[in-house]
Amino acid sequence: MLTLALGMERKKGFIYLDHPADAKFQAFGRSLEEAFSQAALAVASLMWEPGRVKRAESRGVLVEGKDLEQLLFKFLSEILYLFEAKGFLLAAVREVKILQPEAESGNGYQLRAVFEGDRRNNSYSVFGEVKAITYHDMRISQSDRVLVQVVVDM
Amino acid sequence: MELKKINDFTWEIPKQGAMRVPAIIYASERLLATVKKDQTLEQAKNVACLPGIQRYSYVMPDGHQGYGFPIGGVAAFDLEEGVISPGGVGYDINCGVRLLRTDYREKDLAGRRRELLTEIFKEVPAGVGKGGVTKLSRNVLLEILTKGAEWAVENGYGSREDLLLTEENGRMKEADPSYLSSRALERGIPQLGTLGSGNHFLELQKVETIYNAEIARVFGIEEPGQILVMIHCGSRGLGHQVATDFIELMENKLGAKGLPDRELINAPIKSALGQQYYKSMCAAVNYAFANRQMIAHWVREVFSRVLGSSAGMRQIYDVCHNVAKIEKHRIDGQEKLVCVHRKGATRSFGPGRPEIPAAYRAFGQPVIIPGSMGTASYILIGTKEAEELSFSSTAHGAGRVMSRHEALRRFRGEQVRDQLKAKGIELQSTSLKGVAEEASAAYKDVDEVVRTSHEMGIGRLVAKVVPLGVMKG
Image (tube, rainbow over all chains, first blue to last red; front, side, top):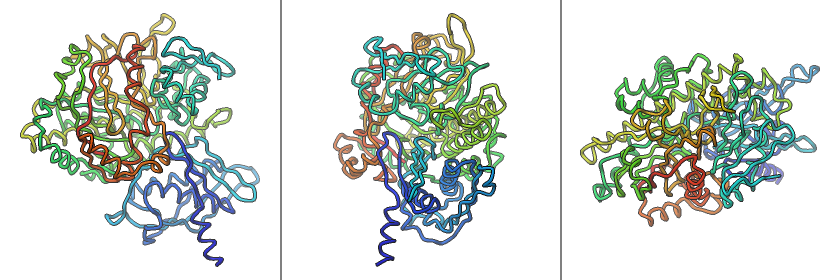
């Protein structure tokens, strides 16, 4: 039962909101790492169904940001780059770790993660195109759970 | 928010707070009501706060909420004190429209329309992130970024005449691809010659109404029923990556503190970073020109093959909708060079401007305004008055009013396709979901947008065209 509940929660890890021109979503998690992972799935789900993509290969991701917003912006941009340049469809995000290597100075974040997915082929339906991640209306709020909000350009 | 009515189509947000200039919105009462529903006015105000902005922060009749700058936003900046902003151009650099005329009439297509569209669909790579036909080397890509549509013509796509009938002759000379990141190049290599998805499309159209026969003839539009081809696409992932990269570079160098919206990030035009963005943007502009040049060539080939000839398929014009350009304008009685940002706006130069092709110079520039999928599109002509009113700019399309999410809730792709079919419009698309998202009910009424442009005199009506066949990525 516990597994089922967690599974369901994972499924509802993000929601889409109305935005006149583009796509806007909120993603949730118990930690920054979880919310960022859900945000990645929200971006991928605008283009293909991550749940239907085989976990055939994995790719290490490393991004740096001077603050959390930039970190999120660059992390999500990674999905677009891998898709367009490498033909890689994201299925799942694993082992996300957000670090602050120079925590005492208060700036600079680093994110490491593993993307699992597959090369694009005709068995996958790609139905949307995210042009870019934006900072517009971006929110990252951390209380008992973490919420991130992102608008993407479509 | 205080909004002062200047006339039936002009509204002003007076200078207040940190605004350096007032903002002007061109809209009918009806369009204004939709503009008020989102953050367009707030965004126009934010743009008015940027250093070096000249005269007004403008919003065109199809204006709607963007990120940072509104879509439909036009702003010109002083070259000494002003800024350049990737958010003022948009992520899809040189998203634009190319329009071809033909000698064909609707009756010539009888029974052949479907075949024509199917063949175009085969020939022009559509869809999301779909690979182009040629695997480019990095060196060839760099050449394309430098030479734009000129490269395409030199390599057998179309003719020299096409270049003369393209904004900037299909090449922004200031382009310097050496500032592009390796990621931008990697995203550009597989996508050259592709249409892309979202709001991008290729349409077979027929002329429905001619408002100004003299000008229409100058553009090669002769009578109702004449077939035209419209190509709407941009610089694909390469342009998106240039914007993404420079937003980050500018943030890291200059910081986004004090900006009401992080997407308004900018750099002084004359700074090294400002210049690097400008030269990179020009390279992305060139990529998009080459892209449309190649697609137009394939369309002509299909016409040749299916209908026997592509003679007479002269280009009417090719316009940019998302761009920043250095142009001469008269400000406070003085001619000066400024950097005009048009984000979802069409340049609309009136007669006499040296930038206009010789064939049109005595009349004004063709302005091409695509509607949404399945609705009318319009050809307008630029005006002298637009120089004073909008730094020679007008609308660029219909402008969305409904989120993609809501469109998906309300419409089904199959149903949209069937409705188009009932109107006699063939549809070819890689995704029915994309078709639902682009349903015309999700857009403003393009008729009202062009009426406002015409009444205001920032772009006057020449002809109305309607689709016969739509190819959507």
